[in-house]
Amino acid sequence: MRSTRPRLALGAAVLAAALVLSACGGGGTSTDSDDVDTAVDGKGRTLTLWHYENETSAMGVAWKAAIEQFEKETGAKVEFENKAFEQIRTTASQVLNSDKAPDVMEYNKGNATAGLLASQGLLTNLDGAVNAYKWEDKLAPSLQTTATYDSKGVMGSGSYYGIPNYGEYVEFFYNEDLFKKHGVEVPTTFEELEQAMAAFEAKGITPLAESAAEYPLGQLWYQLALTKADRDWVDSYQTYTDKVDFTGPEISYATETIKDWTEKGYISENATGLKAEDAGVSFINGEAPMFFSGSWWYGRFVEEAKFNWSTGLFPGAEISPGSSGNVWVVPTQAKEKDLAYKFIDITMSPEIQNLMGNNGGVPVAADPEAITDEKSKELIANFNTLTEQDGLGFYPDWPTPTFYDELNAGLQEVLNGTKTPDEVNEELGGLYQDGVDSITGGS
Image (cartoon, rainbow, N blue to C red; front, side, top):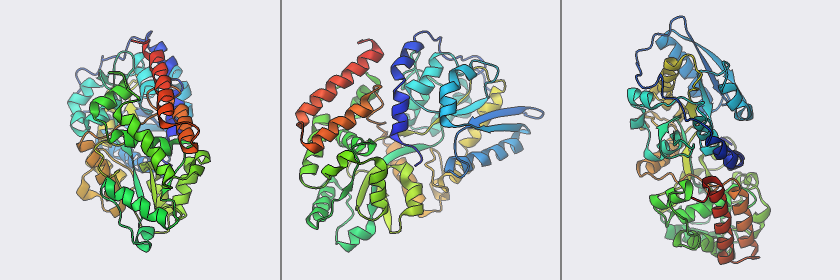
């Protein structure tokens, strides 16, 4: 898989400590980025670059081409090092505070990662480069959220400290062969979705491939809440702009619907012990007609699913789980910042964005007419629909250090029937607020 929510949970696990540390930080530096010249002469110079993408992934392919284009355009050389994700995550603070820092590197977005480094003064404020290269014009508002951080390292406001050039989101995958075999229409509305699930259940087929031991069911729960939510609610849930009422219409509807769909046989009670891999494989094996999960499954389904399948956003939803991908950051200690900005700009260029899109990625600024693969077009079109309507809602486990595990446990109890939806909502609301208070100091 391209990305998984367990990785995000790992990042969240250091969130509380991260924000405590951030109070001691001085914030990122804006020196060297206030007046950015885009006419870069790199002759005789070297850009050091770190990222952790596999060379055959969409990003790996695209960024290799970006290196070649950068060297051709600037005359500079690129010294590239492929680093493991954990290698960068665990050593970033020490390395970036030394003369060993690279000039530009890929880093995970979010409060506990890019936000922490920015708050510690280890990342360059990119506002000047954003203005000079007009990157803001290429980034939808919901993509900008994970690129900007305030003085405490909390995303969504303040200055730019990272630039994403790809995205990810959660959507439905449909086994079209099963739909055709059983005479069921692929849904385009919420009413049709429930009708389709009922039709499959009546034929003895559990319609939804699900996992409550890991992230898929939590994402479905959050998506159901988002169907009743607006951007203000998302901001409150994710960035603490207001209190979140877990007895309100958004979360009450989500938990009640999970319970209802389980009782109707649309979700198997056995999902309590299943992991994301189990749910994904049941779809790959042609056992389940529908799977609601992330765009990171796309490449695997292309390779392994031996049937006709399609994708679609959650019917009727204006907001769905999703976000930018990881971000390019420029360390404060970088020696070649103007080269770093130029390289980032090349990764945002149509040529590189289109290449990423044609290799199964979700670029943020591709030309739709340049994407030739039909399934890639579908994948990117869905993402563009979300970003154009400011529809990326992030993920349910992002707000607090422990909410990933707490949400999974609560939903398992809903499936098992050991607690009512009201009881689960009350418990989750208390755990959520305790986590937020630990980060904000209760303010």
